[in-house]
Image 1 (tube, helix red, strand yellow):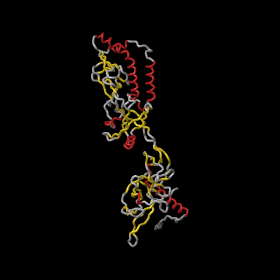
Image 2: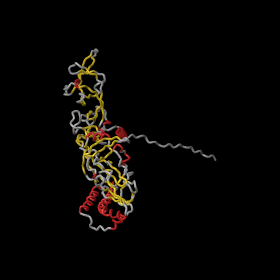
Image 3: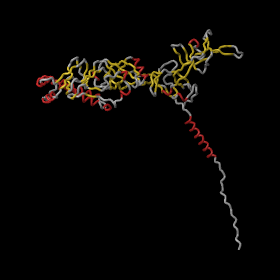
Image 4: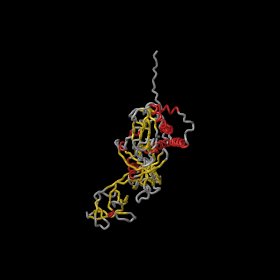
Length: 470
């Protein structure tokens, strides 16, 4: 029986007709428009205005400096146990007794065998301890904890001073008992202030100071302890032989030049809030950095135990119009002598008379009103915008007797004022500035006034650009 063929059928998917919805079309158009606006917003420089106000800037006036003095290190002549008679900070004259050297240690045994008593200190001696402790408490800073060790050794020296008052009473007895001079006296080789520490900075001059000397992680201070064993040639003390001393601080070259021009600057020592006037001297040392030397003629003994000091320079804050540094720009102008500027134009401004050519080729003159951006009272020249003049043009004076060829240019520092709806350059005189703000001289003829609006970022506009203020 023959099989019946089944005819295959191809099934096609039914496509719905495109149904354009007017609401959907409007949504798509709006969406595309919003995307384009967002892209343009992020690709366009935005002009932000800033309102000029009065203000001040305080300069960074706290510095950490290195103390320099005239210091002479004294070395031991003989070996033995050293006992100091003069105390830290004492002023000794030539040949005054400073310390004694006990070659055998018998003097120390003699002193230890004596009973000094619990109440052996006088009221004056106790007051000296209290003053020293009080001074340390008021000047202590956790950031400079190493000062605690200085305080420790200072107290030891004070104790030695009080105890050594009994030394001289025993020296002659011990020498007589031994039949020889086993205890030797050492006198001061010059007049000066005694200090019992060294650090290798004693011969340092202000011109030799470099950045590495300020690295306190590598700084080492060596104290001389009472009753310690020394060898011949060891350092036993030092003398500060001059009341004149100085502090060297690292400074910015511009700021340093300003301080040197002052001659003297008032200095506050943060350790004890003491104030003094220091003479300024600017230095450019071997490492290429700039340093300021502050020289003093008094109070050296107050900081005898210090090599590093924190000081504050007391200078007046600059006050004036406060503007952002980002708003400052430089612009080039033509310089025109005073006699070629005609004051009082039709609109009350200034004007110039310049050479021009008529249609028939004859030479003539025309009067053009100009905007003056600055007047230099020393050179007697006006600054005119280069957009209205061309190099090589001839100008006439008010009487038409003399001519001047435009060529000389100069640059002014200023900002873009936007009070009139466009970027209008205004010259400024910067009194002081830091990384963010500048103080501008107020009440200048061609400058800014309080409550003016300026462009916050000068790089976002061009000269005479119209600005939409919202």
